[in-house]
Amino acid sequence: MLCEVDILGMIASILEPETLSIFIQLLLSVFLGALVGLERELQGKSAGLRTYALVSLGACLFTVVPLYGFKGFLDVSALDPSRVAAQVVVGIGFLGVCIIFLKGDILYGLTTAAGLWISAALGVAVGAGLYWAAIFATFIALVILTILKATERYIHRDRPGDVRHDLT
Image (tube, rainbow, N blue to C red; front, side, top):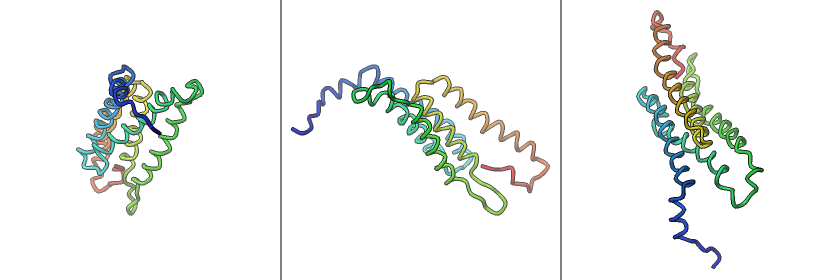
């Protein structure tokens, strides 16, 4: 046979601690990304719960693969996982540019793009095993998206016709 597949070995590998750890990392990443996305969803933004969860999951998986996936093929000491994180930043930057648009004198989509950017960073952090940093960053992102939005509204309360401050 050209390709033998050890089905029993694959099933047994699911229960290995390293595999379970990866599953936990992926699930935590989705949960944290979805928390940030939930705030955007509640604000009626097009990029919401699913988008943020998927971005965080993808970033986490891109981070986990080089950490665990090439052990049998390459000298692990030669791998540089930070290169993956750098590419995630570039990719999310491209996605973010697609979200931002100008309509008249008003710029839209900046907060959504920034939210996707932090969602990707959450995925990278979880993928790298920095769980508490990711959890704390999620908390900070939610504070920024909720409390600072209320602060912005308070600051601009005397200018009801001025929507330039609403860069979401």
